[in-house]
Length: 202
Image 1 (cartoon, rainbow, N blue to C red):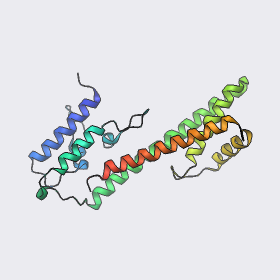
Image 2 (tube, one colour):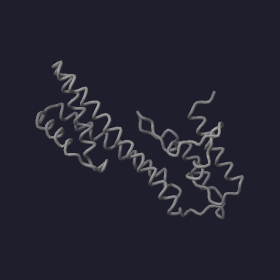
Image 3 (spheres, rainbow, N blue to C red):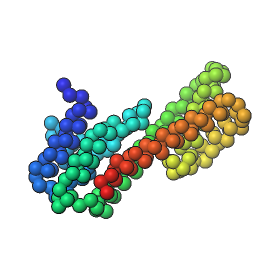
Image 4 (tube, rainbow, N blue to C red):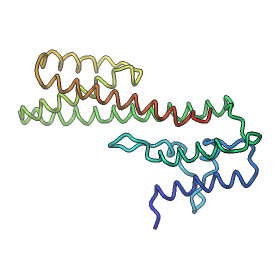
């Protein structure tokens, strides 16, 4: 039995073939996704093609994206206008914005859960665990307050300043800052890869 990844990729490939067979004059990844259906007739997820591995942050369907880009690029010139319409561009931008908003909400959820865990740990007076949770709270707060997410929260400033004052010059602060830089790089890389994947049709 095919897994969800195989089923999704099969639906995408069949969608492309169907559009081609129907004489679609302008085939794009957006149209392929909108036309794609699973065997039960249900539509595939609109952002699934650009989904990333939760651990490695690599695109799950990178090979399929490259395959589609190649197929689209090889279409007869009279069947494909490489200049995208503003409607298609806006659709892809809205999808990307939705993905970033979802990531922001996930970070906020983690922060709330971590604050709750920190309060419970503080009652047990577990110094090592408290330091670890403070470090994780600091990392999340810093990311949420950074320009990557595009918002600032006064409450997060307090968490950041408190941690930096308490652990100034200590190894725990150094490690936390290294983790922040690593995660910022991964997020920026993820954004660039996704945007390239979305606009490679240009």
